[in-house]
Amino acid sequence: MDSSLNSLRKKAEKDLSKATLDSNVVLVEDSDLDFTIINKVLSPQYNVSRFSTAEALLEQLGDLKVSLFLFDYRLPGMDGIDLCQTIRSVPAFEHTPVIMLTGENYTNFEYKFWDAGCNDFIAKPYSAVTLQKRVEKELKYSALLEQHKEASMIDSLTKVFNRRYLEVVMNQLSARYESPEVSVLLLDIDYFKKYNDRYGHLAGDAALVSVTNTVKRALTRDTDFISRWGGEEFAVVLPHTNYEGCQLVAKRIIDLLHEEHLPHEDSPCGYLTISIGGVTVPESPRDWKTLFLKADENLYEAKKSGRNQYCLKPEV
Ligand code: GH3
Ligand code: MG
Ligand code: MG
Ligand code: MG
Image (spheres, protein in one colour):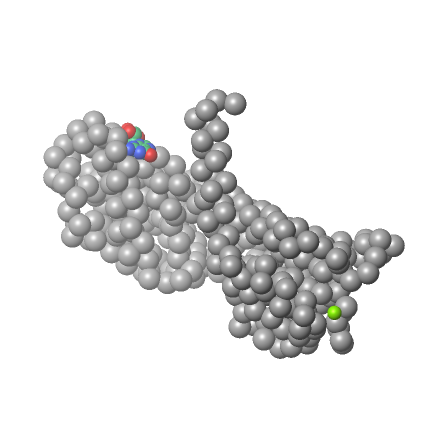
């Protein structure tokens, strides 16, 4: 393998190991002796907390931040398999890694551990290094999945949702039984090619980040969100927002950019501006793409009328 690729790989491995340090490992183990041993092996790298029974863990589950569960199979009361099944039915822990510790030889029903949703199991007696490596492997894999999930939803430059995620959200919104009034905005930076030409591509990238942050400041409800539509264009979705509300948000964005006043000497305004096209509909349509087509037509109007303005229309 090419040596620069090799060093990238090493860096990724190192980052992953770092990401797993200080993970919260939650152990359910009734034996004090086993707990002492496990704690000695894992506590140098992780925060280990212990419960003596499944019931004690379930009682406090709502307050816990857990990176990995380690369950002894044989417990007084509910056993490790039932506990694992219960954990899997709690949305917050649906994907949290679970490793089962089994006492004797359970070869005959190993399938039960897998069926219950555990990620791995370790049969006693095991060595300290095996315990440590198995835990590390699960934590790394889990961190990798988390990173991948983030990368598939988030735009790497602006750190807002990407278009793929927008599509997921819009599909959900359209499929809802009760589909609310909704407004969408399409934003396009004015004379951005000229901005890049004058200030350079890196400054262009920084300007994209700055505009994103300004737009975010204009969005006040938790349900509002911005995503990068592509290039220098952004989509803003405002659920449960009527025409007046939509106008308010569009005006706020234009005003905040005016306050920000990011110099753009090749724009007639002298600072970086955007144009906005938007549409409000009384209920989210089955085919949400038509919403953005309409918003795009209105964006074209805003551009044609001189830029640095919004053109919004309610649909009935
Ligand atoms: P208008 O006012 O009509 O919108 O003109 P414009 O120059 O903004 O539009 P045009 O579509 O002609 O050019 C868009 C430019 O946006 C092209 C490209 O240089 C720039 N751009 C798109 N994505 C990025 C990016 O990720 N980083 C940087 N720096 N520039 C980008
Ligand atoms: Mg036990
Ligand atoms: Mg454009
Ligand atoms: Mg543009």
